[in-house]
Amino acid sequence: MPIDDLWYLTRRGPDKKRLPSKRHGRGKRWRVRYADAAGEPRERLFERKVDADAFDLECRSGVAAEVKATRELDRLTFAEYAQRWRESRESGWATETRQRIPQNLRKHLLPVFGEKAIRSINLTDVLAWLGRLLDNGVPKSSVSLYFGLFKTIMNAAVVDKVIPDNPCNGVKLAQILRGLSRAPKWVPTSDQVLRLVEVVPRRFRAAIWLGAGEGLRLGEVLGMEAGPRCADYDRGELHVRQQLRHSPQYYGGFYLSTPKSGSTGTVDLDAVVAEELAAHLAEVGPVEFELPDITTGERLTRSVAVLFTSSRGKLLTDTYWSELWAGWREAAGWPKEGTFHSLRHFFATTLMSNGVEPQEVQKALRHANLRITLETYVHWMPKKDRPRGLVGGLLRNADSTRREPRADQDRS
Image (cartoon, rainbow, N blue to C red; front, side):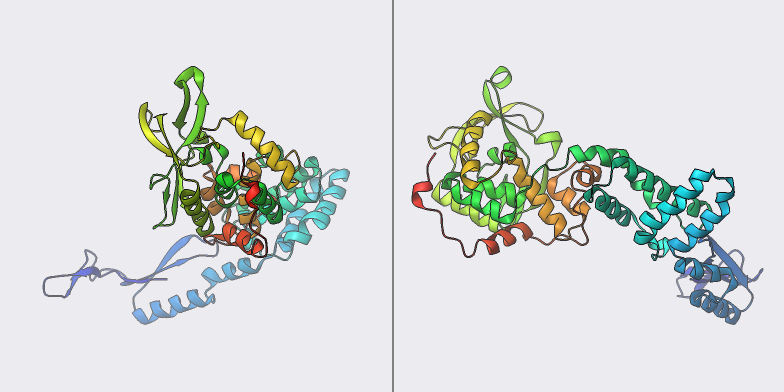
């Protein structure tokens, strides 16, 4: 809480002496700025600095009457405020409401938020609670009811100036509930990913690592080319700027375009994925093609060293890839729900379940906004920042005791 000398400016003159202000010699000289019990900025003027220092100390220690209530609010729990809220309103409730609200409070809100200081409850707490309800199979209608009650109480706390804002306002519940259909229907385990790696031929193995270790979509993987345009090994960066598409009607066959929804971006290049890409370049190598490129908005044709091609050195269509995938999926023991996109889900849920913040997961997946990430992966709420190379390291550790794939598996 700063103390200001109103008689002098903060800057000094050429002689290094402080310059007098316009109010020099008039009125009280010392000003103490502080936040009152409601958190609003206030100030108080004093003639003597010793009095200003004493008041400033009282404000800092919470003794001053002007700020004392703030310390009490800091300790106010959700249970205490919810009790006051209920008692002040129940006289106007119908009989059914008088029974339902206390019951929902007791069973569904107080066990989660009751002992928390109401000012400490944040958006992540609310989303984690909703995620647990959905994980436990609570009906959507009940989730909406409990959330609505919680939001109403927190809105009242804002009006009463108990909390500065309502963390529920950042939750789009209808979109989260709709997002259940977007949530992964099946996510492979680390062991299942490694089983797939074992059965996939050498020329496509790095593609699997790009899906599982970087979260790339299939088109983005097939659009990977050799050189720094896509991978900067020195900086440890992966540049996702294009995908391979096939359209005989418009471009006469294969061409490069921006990724889905324009989700271009630079992400961390996992060290293990980098090793797999280097091995792929050394053992398989790229194949040069002249391809139309519309990633800049204009069509141009350029030479592209494509990383992943068929055993005959041809570009891969979705149909041909699906035929290859069906055999690999069956050999790995994956269910029919297991697609290449399941590797992206594995990447995202591994980050989430290992404590990575949702903003970091959004950045890694290159989602257009955080809402998409939360709606899709609401069941895996994060707690801390994302470590570099997390997924690749976990898979490499899990694979440390496994044998190298047999030579006769290298076919397709």
